[in-house]
Image (cartoon, rainbow, N blue to C red; front, side):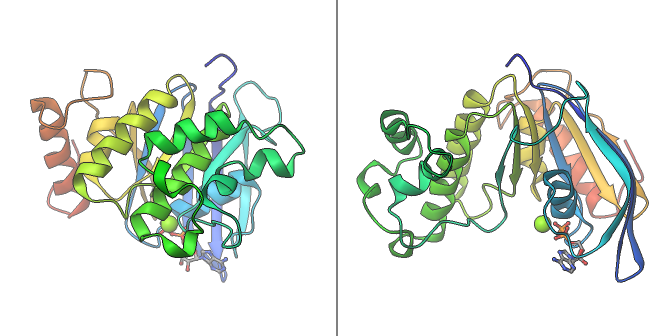
Amino acid sequence: MAGSPGILLRGRHRVDGKLLFDVELDIPAGRWTCLLGKSGVGKSTILRLILGLDTGGDFSGAFHATDDAPLDGRISYMAQSDLLLPWLSVLENVCIGARLRGQNPGLARAERLLDRVGLSRHAAQKPGTLSGGMRQRAALARTLFEDRPIVFLDEPFSALDAGTRADMQELAAEVLVGRTVLLVTHDPAEAARLADQITVLTGEGARNWPVPVTPPLRAINAPETLACQAQLLDYLRGRKACA
Ligand SMILES: Nc1ncnc2c1ncn2[C@@H]1O[C@H](COP(=O)(O)OP(=O)(O)O)[C@@H](O)[C@H]1O
Ligand SMILES: [Mg+2]
């Protein structure tokens, strides 16, 4: 997508005076970066910092888009909790951004996305009547509906069964082609499949992990996907120093 910039972030983040991370993070333009790391290491915090949301800590450093234009209004965000509004229907939740901005909600496109995430028959239901996986797919549809050049996805497929997860990965890869995507995931297989860049976050910093030479979206059972996934899992388990 033309106009999808990269993002550079440098700095330290402290929570209760204690250093959480000290990073140099380069998120390349128009590509998928998968961010992995142990729970509590600060993955969601990085997204929230760039979004200008409260993190409960202190950041000293800077970040900017590589085109030097403000990031405001250019990022769509799928939070780790789905943030669906309980009093609105699934369809209304998908369109909520447009409605809040006073724009035409684009119902036909919202309905098409709901169809793609398998929720057509549930468009009129309230979120409280849906399963966890269905709620997550509704939140995904809302994020894809936003049509922004930069997209932050915080564990967007975590509540899905394996088959649905693969389907939703493929949908997101298709809809978000050419955009700058930052995806937080715990799943080495997901990163091996989707990533142009894999970045592992630890207290020591962010380091990039080698990705297969083939471009994403990679087949789940391709040898290079399986090899990357296995080596990354060993690393995350502390059984491999580095690739
Ligand atoms: N709003 C907040 N207030 C206080 N501490 C927070 C807040 N959000 C996150 N933290 C703390 O920051 C650290 C990193 O959290 P987080 O970024 O959510 O980790 P991750 O997404 O990698 O699991 C944790 O120790 C967490 O308790
Ligand atoms: Mg998190």
